[in-house]
Image (cartoon, rainbow, N blue to C red; front, side, top):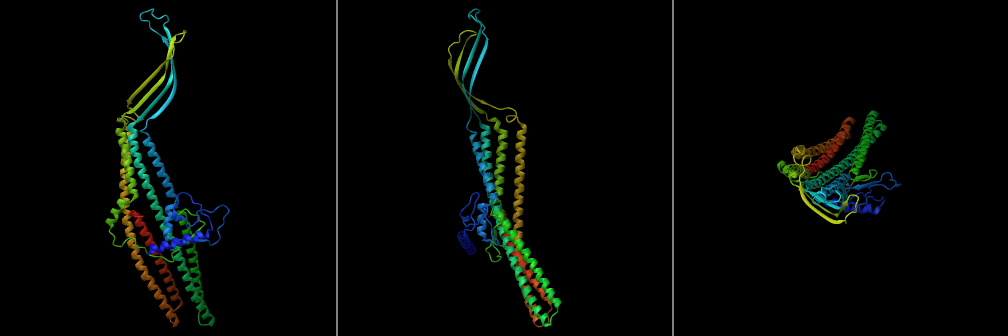
Length: 466
């Protein structure tokens, strides 16, 4: 039911802002249909924002904008494109590289006469012009480089998913910070209203000569203090809007305001959720672990290629077509005769980059061992995040219950204190303390609910559910 309300709010918001069409949108990078609401990403040159220009936004719109416009996601997407291009390059190594050239060879030398006197001149020259074509492929490098490149492409794909989930989590928590700041500002306004009403009553009593002027000044001090708190809350709200706009890659000069009227506790996980089940879900779903496994497979392929790749020979072929001519030194040349030569062979490389390259083999094994240790460390980190996240969710849920009871008690305390004041029994200090307790209780409840919502999303991110 709540999601339906959010979708309705999002649709109304998109239609309203698109109808206003106050500022044009300059989208950078990929977008989707969710970003048709008309929120300005940047301001055109010469455009001015009017004071107090705000744009409403809700949680579903925030999450969709994070997936469509976040710059870190776009950077990770380009990293995936690079990894896919590297894989294509590795596959192209199976095709032989070809070199073409033109050559001219000339030689001079003495010819041994057998039997002596057979040739009139023992000094001859020859020349061999023609074109050569050479092709070669390193099968060992091609096989294992393609295996490693495929795994690195998979790792980049999971890195993109990791960045997407991080961006969504940052956007959700930024939205909750904005909701909390708005609610705390409203609490401060209510506290100011209560204090001002009480101050007016005391002012009337002082004017009538039945109250002490110092009590009125004490309440006035309390009012001014609440106004300071309101200014701090407004500053916090604006900063939260700027941070959220930065995550969503929107113009920070556009002030975002939440559509939600107040805070609401989410229930993404039950308080009796099994930690073992959540850990198993995280180990199976977290994209970081899938990325680590793919990177580990790439390191394993690189190590295997360093050990066994040099055993696979390189295959090469060469073709030459030209002519062969020559004659006695200083005499007329013979007619240039056509010549064609073809050669096919296999070769093994010895030394650096080939057989008996111990340094390359040891380095590949060390990189594989480091990747295995990093994978184990990552698994421990994921498990710790799930356990800590569940503890945070359960703790904040308990704090909400306590905050609700505290709020009810503070409200009742203020009501009874006002009754004592009407009968002339209570004193000003009691009323001020009751007001402060109610304001603190309201603020504590707002903070407890928003911390619980952020903990819910953090746990959802920890188990790979975003």
